[in-house]
Structures are given as C-alpha cells and as structure tokens.
Amino acid sequence: MDWLRQYLPKDGSVELRSLTNDHTILVLAGPKSRAVLSACARGDWSASGFPWLSVREARIGHAPAIVMSVSFSGELAYEIHVPNASLFAAYSALMQAGAAHDIGHFGVRAVDSMRMEKGYLHWKSDLITEFDPYETGLDRFVCQDKDFLGKSGLVARGGKKRRQLRMLEIDATHASPQASDSLYAGGELVGSVTSAEWGHRTGKNIAYAFLQPDIIEGLTVDIIGKPYAARGSERASL
Image (cartoon, rainbow, N blue to C red):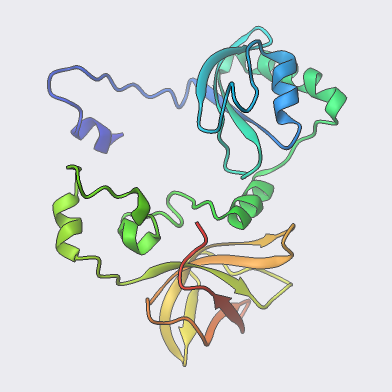
C-alpha cells in the first residue's frame, strides 16, 4: 500500500482505497465449477463468454460479487470477491447449486500442492524483491521497449544472474523441505528453498529454490537433519 501510494499520479486521476477488511474471497475450483457458477449466477459463463483472466460484476444468488476467471489451484476456477455482509448469502447459493455436483471443501495445503505442480509462484515466497524477473524466470513479462519503474537498474544489470529459480524433485517421501532450507553441492552452500510441498497427483516431492546458475547436478537438501538428493532443471517450470 505504501509503495502504491508513493507512485500515484499527482493529478488525482487515480484513487487508491483498501478493501481488504471489507471483502472476502471465495474460490470455486474444479472441472464442474463452471456448471456450479452457471446454476447460481446469471450471464454467460462459458469458456468463450467468460474466458481465462476475465473479470465481471455479478450476483451469486442475491449477493453482489466481482468474479474473476483465475485461481491459484491451476484448475478451472473462479475467484469470487464478496462484501463481508453478503458472504453467507453467496456461500449458501454456491453450496446449494453445487449439491448436484458433489461440491466439497478444500484447504490451503491442497491449493499449495496444486499450484506447485502447476508451476504457479507464490508472492513473498518464490517472488521476492531480492531477485529480478530474469532470475525468477519471468523475463517474458519484461518489455524493454517501454518505460517502467526500475528499468534503469534492470538494464544496468545486463541480464547477469546471481541466482536462478528452479523446480526441484526431492528424493524423499516422508517429509518436504521447509522454506529457507539450504541446498548444497559438493559440500558448498549453493542456494536455498523458497517453498516445498508434496504433489499428490504427480506423486513427487516438489520444491522451488534459488540456486547458483551454474549448479544443476549433485544437489542435496537437509530434511529433519539428513541430506536427500534434489534433482531439477535449469529453470523452474513456469
């Protein structure tokens, strides 16, 4: 919020107001989520009528909402932003419409597992201000043909990478590494884990980590006091 306020246009053409404490987000996810949404909200929710990354004001039952076709789960999903006063009404409408489709609840650990399998990065874990877009594997989003905040510093770096974010598969089935756990190669510290979780559909122990760019093989990470092999690619699958 402080950063956004600092760079607001001085002519007053843009207003910034936090709605964090006034709204709650409901996430409707899964292969039947479009059918559930269509049953309790008017409008065309088809893939062509409301494609990925679309946003629309709508009513879930009688509750006002802002619906976005996006989700951290990697599934067909919708983020439904609802004023707190209408939260129960929206939730009830979704659950009633979903009863015919065996709707159920899922937790944040399930979302984390799915997003890691999908290659979605987490802000403040995998996406941090210590590393630039080239080091994080987001260079396809950098347009050097236009001006943006921080461009001069990014250009001055010349694409030089101190670390590279990579996806790793850990040879352990009993536990996952923890964020900030160290990675070693040949007894030398070469990087650290940003996030890790068991992939229940891939059956793999997945971690993301910032590593020295030239280190690919011979990696180990300590899990509950013992080293386990970590295998990965040159960059994260994003």
